[in-house]
Image (cartoon, rainbow, N blue to C red):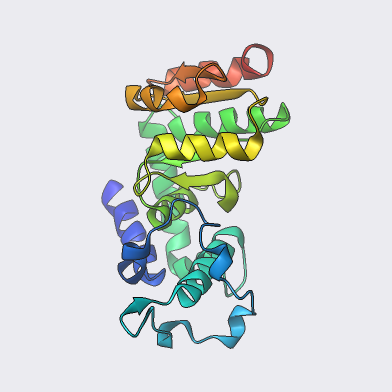
Length: 222
């Protein structure tokens, strides 16, 4: 199962130009917006556009590709969606995810319940991944969390670090907002110093603790 999902991840990263874009990794999907001309993507030949111009990065072309990836992540059907890229792999992937869920004591199901509980309570879920941005978005799509996390709600800490990401989140949502950090790593707790006094740390060590959180989040956490 893990091998099959890894192959799917590798396939998608290839189709999303990861090898070319890796050196231009950004912590957020909007990081390159100032360079985007916002013209229809249908007018561009993505594979023919150079990401380097006279020895320098062509950030306009890079921004266009990032916008294509963002729109593909958000689109659930149609020729521009990631689902279309997967095509014949979709049914196999669904079975693999079911097996992962069962073998991990329904971890995926528990995580989704937590996220839906937060949404129902009027909260917003944000993910700060430890990987680079395109792999993070790809994994979220594969595990079917793209319907829960919009591209704007995804941060990748590989380039700037988690403390920087937390700081940007606080800047965006304001210091008066209540923040709850959910995770199983003490490293996360350490990086939360940037929101010290504004954030409650909720450690998650297993699927059982996720289920417990899902059942009590409305009353006790938010």
